[in-house]
Amino acid sequence: MIEAAQFVEAARARGFDWYAGVPCSYLTPFINYVLQDESLHYVSAANEGDAVALIAGVTLGAKNGRRGITMMQNSGLGNAVSPLTSLTWTFRLPQLLIVTWRGQPGVADEPQHALMGPITPAMLDTMDIPWETFPTEAEAIGPALDRAIGHMEATGRPYALVMQKGSVAPYELKDGGAPARRTQTAPRVEFRGVAANELATRHDALRKVVAHTPPDSTVVLASTGFCGRELYAIDDRANQLYMVGSMGCVTPLALGLALARPDLRVVALDGDGAALMRMGVFATLGAYGPGNLTHVLLDNGAHDSTGGQATVSPQVSFASVAAACGYASAVESDDPAVIDELFDTPPLDGPRFARLTIRRGTPDGLPRPTITPPDVKTRLMRHIGAA
Image (cartoon, rainbow, N blue to C red; front, side, top):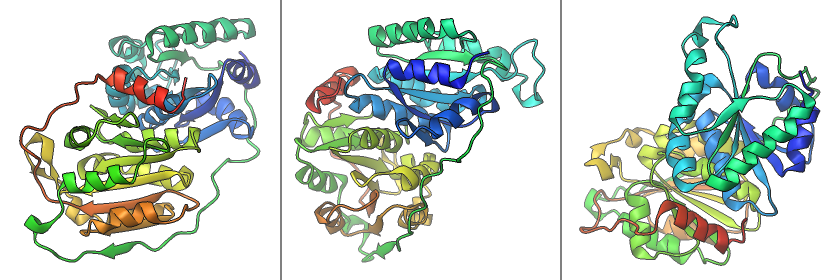
């Protein structure tokens, strides 16, 4: 058994100062220690997949050798499969995972861990994530971290430490570490009721975003599907990244980048289907999101890139959700002028949100990006001076 301080301080010495995750009783000493050190950063995510995407965003903007750790119970691997297989693996965005081993064979545990426990190693192997058991002796901590860093630097992909029961001594929590409650803003809902064929197109909206996001001071992260492809077709700029998977993860990715890089304005271009898939992240953005984060939701009420199947977005007031979750401003409209207004207003003390309803459909012959995901990531990191 080790002390929480022994691992966290050894990790800090190697550049790990960002943590995100969902609690497990095995992780309690770590979380309690990190929460009470103001020089470390911990984000309590709504689910484990959001935590993986958030730390990927930290990695995207990392300077001076800074690194991130995602912590989760092994049951949470199910929630994290998509970002682990189509975000961190695809874009080569490394992070250290600490995964607890509930239901480990031979160790009595609750019935919900009876299947996940035995298959945890196989799940990590299947996702091409090398792993070893978490160190339980102080002298083993440094070598384990060095092996993890060696793999991360050589491959650009995650490495996991699988924590067994009783690996870390208890550490008392003196302060819960909750972010300060933000004053709720009133949502603005300003629909003109124009006909569907008179709504702005995605192309119209993206052109406005491009006009307001100069490459020297902003980063634009586009959701998977036609959003990223249309942005690429309009103008392939060094300050842009096009998601190719991990549906719903563009917002936690943007949050991680915005937290790590307060010197940049970070814009997350979201879609209605993606936003509906991970609505819990609205609460995380509202609680932790800084003023340099802008969330733009282009809503055509359909899964456009898969044939136009309807989403349930017409039943949802996303601006009301964003406002209730603590965003500094939240508006929804069918007037594309909200995009101009969103970028023209002075800085706020939290993230801002705008939902614009747009027309269905996409231009004929829409190209796919020819730049590969690792290359677009590397180009962006170089552009913003990241490692």
